[in-house]
Length: 347
Image 1 (cartoon, rainbow, N blue to C red):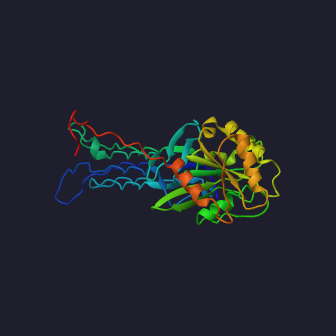
Image 2 (image 1 turned 90 degrees about the vertical axis):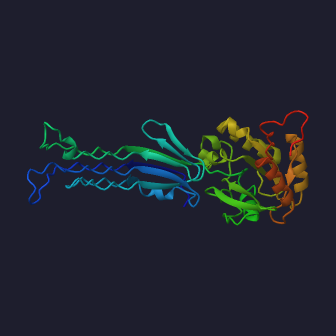
Image 3 (image 1 turned 135 degrees about the vertical axis):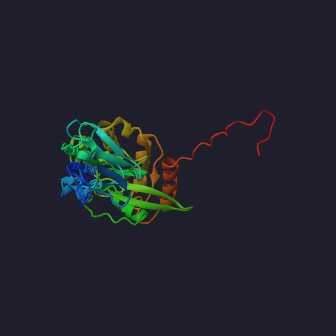
């Protein structure tokens, strides 16, 4: 089950209480105070991992409590510290404070850590209060409570390429062709109910991460169809691959109109999303009349349109190379520093 939002309560551990104790041993008169300090409570941490791709583990469990610190003991022994609680979240998780509405951390890279709630400090034992004028202290400190926070977790998938288009534009079929992902494929709208990620292998040990987003319809930015529930996942992609069905009998809009419908939804949802690099691709080119539909689309939008068939494999290699150039542009080589003196030849 794909879950991309969850609300949880995290509570750090309470610090252990300090101890009141006095040294009592045979042949040793007037033993002094020897009560130890309490241990610190455990903190709650989040860490971004790559072996999780959903927040489902937080959907069924809303309370996450770190262990408390143990109280101090006699013979100047401190209590054991409570171990930290580590929450493993997918890369791309945003952590919001529900009370303030602030974004606490964007877990956008693998291995990133964030302290969500700090454990309470342990209290001091009576040995800490001994003075020359106060040799029999009975004071001690109670451990501090751990911090408590209500959080909202929001997952935004991170991918090189995001597939967008009307329902039945061929997004799931293309993802299944390019990768080992196995999204549901059927001849009716909205067969994709949640985003799917696929790893696409290219020659030369190159790879792309492709995200298949459920089909959009007019009004999606306001919640129509599956709504803007999944548009947020496209925000993280470097490149948008806009698929337009130009040959199927199930097409309800002409290719140019289908293209403009999706563009309007992207622009209304987020201007920054609409400004991302886009590659327009005509799908199902193997069907009768599809070539004419692709020509009509290219003429209407006045930009190049790639043509592919996920069934026969036509145009797939060219598409992957074009996506690689957009999603992974070659870095500009930086000049050497310090620069070589004029008239010299670098080694």
